[in-house]
Length: 474
Ligand code: ADP
Image 1 (cartoon, rainbow, N blue to C red):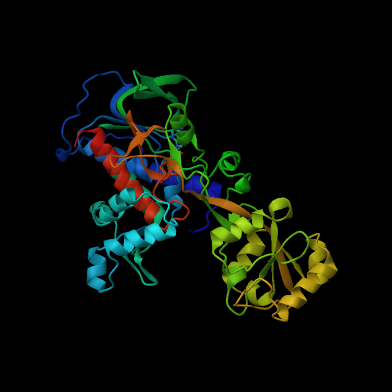
Image 2: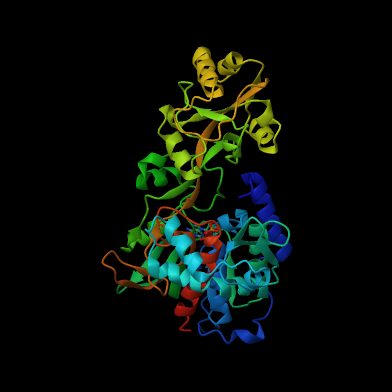
């Protein structure tokens, strides 16, 4: 995922909103049918969608296409959520791109990869639905005018022909949303509680810009509030190991509201202990692990005792967990000029406010580490004596030397509310909670202990559409 500061992100998001238009002055397209709700009450609708990220936008468009009256509430001043910072691309199988390139990535490959990455904890039924609908989700994006190619490094990834994946995606969703007069998009409007009558979810309490609480009544409610990536305390509630992690890799909106609202109506949660964390972040930015795992020249991680504690080349999620086990749950990235001279090396020192010194001892003093211990740690590493089994041992020999404090940062919420094949939310005893659907990162069951990158914007579309179709009876 491309690094982007939050202030930049907000400005960018607002600009996208202004450029593409956030209000829906255009008529309902010819193919959209007639809204089924004739009630003139502005707070009564067929479908209430909570959250305007990838899942909420895909669900709103589909429900509107089916002729439903839709109210979409987004608590931030602009839509996009964490979808807008998604930089990888979409994972889809058996597409025309694969056929044209002669590089197969079959539905079966996709299923296997998703299940294996989840450590076989994902719900097979939901994963089947995800992968079997991936080509149609990809083709739907083409109808929105988006242009893609296969990632030359990995044929499972479909990436934009040019430009930033998430930003383009959200811009296209916004443009599509704006075509429907039956979508009433309300920005800076936060849903706080689901309203239940006779065991059925019939709407939600929302608070708008004016701070006044209103009730929006709806035949169906679709939760699309994203994960808990910007709620480090709540993350700790579900997995104490991750309590208080950094939040460099998220936009402000995903604070677990959907999980709280679903919990309050008795929804079943699953896999909530699993989160993806990126190990290296500092001073509001996150960094690629290449700094510590580059063959031949990579840097190292030390803890507050100035000692190495891990094979730095292990997978990034595990590396984050190992850092969190250290004293004060932090580590320091240490490297020499050869790493500094790579783009990522420069970035972590300049943006992460790292320090520079001509000797290791001096570096240690600036980082408040014990100088003789750090020197001994680095001498041992340079002698290629690695107790942690690192195979691609680099070296830290060429002055000046660099160091920066790092903390893991939350990246993706794997667990969430349990749903069935119609994206209906299930209660703790496995029964459907009538009137309530969920799609996107708020859902649990698709990723278990590990996520295939690029499946997330796919699941927004697949389950956003399924929820909207079922909610509108199509
Ligand atoms: P997904 O990929 O699942 O769509 P995103 O993170 O892209 O997830 O989008 C989730 C969106 O939901 C964000 O824009 C966030 O601001 C919004 N959101 C979260 N909680 C609420 C809430 N209580 N009311 C309205 N919008 C919310």
